[in-house]
Picture 1 (tube, rainbow, N blue to C red):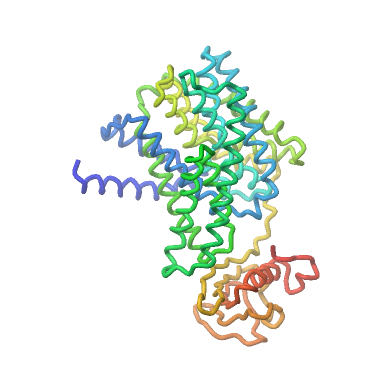
Picture 2 (spheres, rainbow, N blue to C red):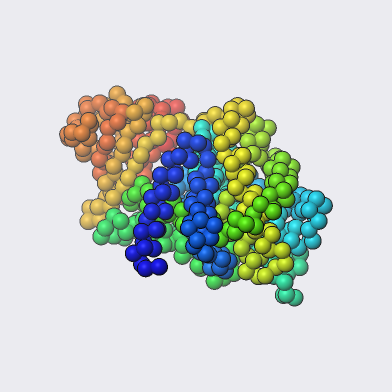
Length: 494
């Protein structure tokens, strides 16, 4: 096929996937299902494109997963997830091991699998999928603690599972025993987390002090640092997936220039990675082999959904003060997506006996149970009486460096329901070194005076020196949430 035909086919698939996002959003489904359907449509049973290279699929899939994890970390609000991190780590490690044990036992007892294939199947199915979780949960009005738990879990749980799947797929005498595997896992997780944090912190430190000549370079630099964290961790035999997520989380929540633009760029790359990944996985699947594994997939899927996932959530969150409604929802919201399908290619590449059957079972489980769980999440949230506890009066802030003045220009968008509305400029009590230089209102701009009253929907241009930049932003956030008496209410804007 000529280059122009490949480009035409590629652009058509991407545009179709973009349209599908709108359809899936209205239906409450993760868009991954439509992307997989597009892959099946152009595959060997559709347009006839033959793709059966499991090794190439594994490489491309892991690369796409790195970008998706980077996007997830960059766009995750640390303030929402920080209180949930200990519980998320517990679910990601202890909960994952519990889920693996339960599903493996069911696979050996109910499907007659040998121990290696049973544990491989259970390990492959253990992690929740970052792309599926982010695309569905961020649309639901849920408590920040619960959303933070599920988002952080989906970012953390890939790392330990990859270690287990790779170890179980090794068929030679060099495969580690149980104690060696535990030691390797502890080292890789700790080292990966530290490498990710260090690269994220150093990268943020450097970007704050180097004024790049074009604003579009900042998003590229942030994403490159996150991907680089994966490479550094992998070279030191640490967990690259944890490194890329942690570094992206640090960078995405650091005080960087053009932060909203960086988030938008990361979201675009994440969508593109998702589209390419799921279409490729649809191409890799053989439709003729899938129906034969429907019944085993349903058996294992319901064991995972109704037994293993709830048990792992309840036991691993013991002592973290989660209500039963939150635990029930977290059990139902353990969405599987691309990660299990990608992991299922590792045994295929290593020529493990029964790997093709395992891939078909996993593929069926992802499709069927995403169809079951995705659209029902809003209903389950209502049954569990969950609602958003976040205050909607949050400012949008974008910063650009003014290198020669040793200052920064902040562009602040005031939400319509912000308590900044009606506050006069002198009542803001901004620190010395900060000044509102321009107000954009209803498409027109003007220089404000000390008695100018702000309104919801205004855009403010604020010049602040480097020393008071953070204090200025915190003060404006505090007033937006609690009004001009924020300091007396204990609101710090943090």
